[in-house]
Amino acid sequence: MTAYLLRRLASGAGVIVGLIIFAFFASHYIGDPVNLLVDREFSTDEDRARLMEAGGFNRPVQEQFMDFAGGAIRGDFGNSIWQNRPASRVVIERLPATALLAAAGLAFTALLAVPAALIAGKYAGRWPDSLISGLATASASTASFWWALVLIMIFAVRLGVLPTSGYGSWRNLILPVVALTPGAIGRITQVLQTSIRTEMRRAYVSTARAKGLAERTVLLRHVLRNSALIGVTLFGAELIGLLNGVVLVESIFAWPGIGQVALQAVQKRDLPVLLASVFYVGVVVTLLNLLVDLAYVTLDPRVRLK
Amino acid sequence: MSATLQQLPSLNAEPSEAAAPRASRLRTFGRELRRRPLTSGAVAVLAAILVAVILNPVLPLPDPSAQALLDRLQPPLSRGADGTLHLAGTDQLGRDVFSRALQGGRTSLGIAVVTVLIAGVSGSVLGLFAGYHLGLVDQIVMRAADLLLAFPPLLLAVFLLYLLGPSLTNLVALLALWGWIGYARIARAQTLSLRQQAFVEGAVALGCSHKRVLFRHILPHILPSLLVAAVFEFAGVMLAEAGLSFLGLGVQPPDASWGLMLAQGQDFVTSGAWWLIAVPGLAIFLVTFPTNLATRWAQELLGIEAKENR
Image (cartoon, rainbow over all chains, first blue to last red; front, top):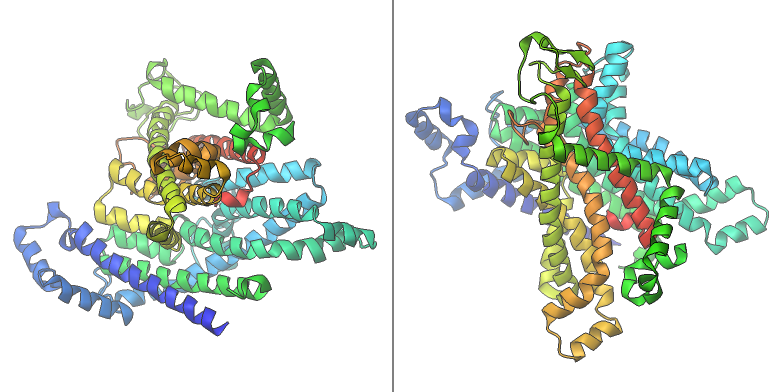
């Protein structure tokens, strides 16, 4: 177990190092850092030369890279161009809002997807099964940002029961969560439904039924537990999916999270903040992946040996 | 019947199915369609959209980029000052939303088709090589896939499009950068199990080159799964393109795409111009929903578990 943990930690560190190398070379060589900071149309050659000098973009590559990597490891990406304070502080302040949105989204997804899959399993082959299957596919096919606009139009504009955007109260949380989750709900329901259907054909289900257990107990105590394994992997994958959707949903609902700050950084040409948000999201996702793997090993003794 | 269909991945091993008279195969197909009214209906709607989008230039519709400032934000089924009927209303510049949606569909669907082709071919070839040769190629390809999947793609795409600048080529390249992974995984997994089968060993023993073994003997067996994956990917690419265009990093004005139309309509949500949101959004949904339904159907026929496509 310790060896496994160490190996996973090492590979996680490898991903972070890869991300730093990628971020440096992408921002310095795919794009010209001076162009990324100021628009070519609105700057003179002298301005650009001054900026080149001030940012140290004319120094040797290895020197710039060591500076960048050393800074990144200490969480120093330089000052935000837009706010003139450390870029990592600008980004880290935004993490709680995104964490809240993603956690609420995950809870909401589980709350809908697991019962839906169980109901479908209970009525396998009958109309509730097909209905849930159809709804799940529809849900998985929905574009979150479109859904967000539809929700705003109905609940905020027409009915006026929920705010169009903002942050602070639980009423602000409802629409972003509902907008964020259709994809995750749909995909998780589909896979859990298939998994439960397969498990229902297993011999242990007949045994459980034969010894007189109520159908409810068979489903909840036996089938669900065996389907939970695939559930853990799925929720791990969907967490990345939710963090992905956060970029769109936060920008629509003016939710002050990391997705919004990344987009603002693009609009304000604030390269340090954009780099910092890519880096911190990478760190968070790597840690979450690690947690998912550990949960998997704890739940399934069969993979413990590897 | 479903028993024979479930063996479709091994088409060659099922001579009775292949040799069945055409009429009976059509009847089987018809029965499948009737068994699934929702899927058949949805696919019919999708086909109608595709035809409308392709025929758009010759359809008698208003010019999609003709502005009429007197007819701004007119609701669906209203008539403009010059008497033209606006089926889905007009936008903030008085342009006909229905024509624009069809024109935007050319962009959105075109991008999706090109991306799926590029990603599908490169992913399949990479997966075939990785699964057949194993070793270093396999390690590099699969680690690259893991790395790409370990990060929220949208944020990375935002970052890269900011560096590269938004353009159609960059958009397709980025979408394909994630698109190939699904095919590579499927192709690799299936090649891995097929390469030990007698018919592959036989082909090798007869002196076939690696290329011939891969593309003539192995590929035909995994093609059905890859085609299903392509249909599945199509919906995902549509959504990704729409999202990036919505953020202003994909298709740029004056071009139209469904995601861009939504972004432009966003400002008019509070003023009640619901058709600016409803029309492009429904257009996206009416492509992704039928494709996803068709994917599930095909997966069931081929006996592929939904999770394999993830």
